[in-house]
Image (cartoon, rainbow, N blue to C red; front, side):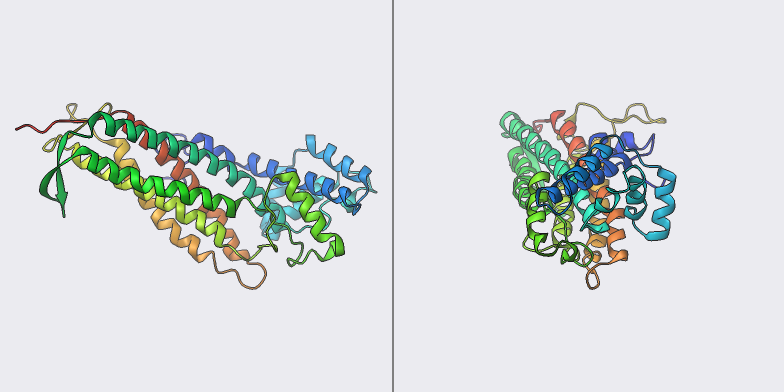
Length: 354
């Protein structure tokens, strides 16, 4: 066992997703936060809130800035968030006249939540592409094998023969619906989080809305009617859709594992796992992984619903819980889609013997 299977040097071979995991690495998070700070400075200059020269210096400095990670680690231990330490390090690279203009009007949550939105938007796009590819593979499987008769099972008992298309559609139908849900939740995720200390942009005065609009445009994010520091329904909706996707893939994996049993033999797997003691076996490893990942996300999604409870204008406890749970759910869903694609591409239904 290990703390996280997703980035373990061995277990990630079974459960990992390098493409999505890269979006939630420390490097990717820092880059997203620095991007926010640079664009905030430029947006402020656009509205004459800070001098144009200061904004240019900030943006130029951030192009090559690399923080001292140990200092960030010590800072988050003290402050509960990384931004005070990060901003302090950036300021040390700026001229004395420019330093007050860095991070002007923003708060830690603006930087962290918007940085997550930028990365989550990209993650959703990856998931959408994979869902589309998987649905195409399922359509091709149905076209090739859909008329082959298989035995339907109700409550784990043999029922009546049905076309394989009946089973395949029970896998593809939910995924089609989840594709629509994922597109809808993307609009809830790809939003700017910018409210300042308590969600009122008070330091920017009457320029607050204008700077927010400029910043949203620069980051290509939607601008909500008001900052959502303590409104976490969009983020939790993403977690719910992730659990739905992985859960439906788990159902497919369970069906395939059962159909591939030696005594049943209704499907043939192109590849399977070997046994150290029984060389004749072809274990349905990918199908089993789908079941595991479905149950993993099913367990974590309840924690994300706990994170809806943000007391007053900001919660340190609920917010930290999101950091622990949501990236793992995204990577688990991505890994499930990769496994499912390989599984379906190598799946063949067998005609029932008379």
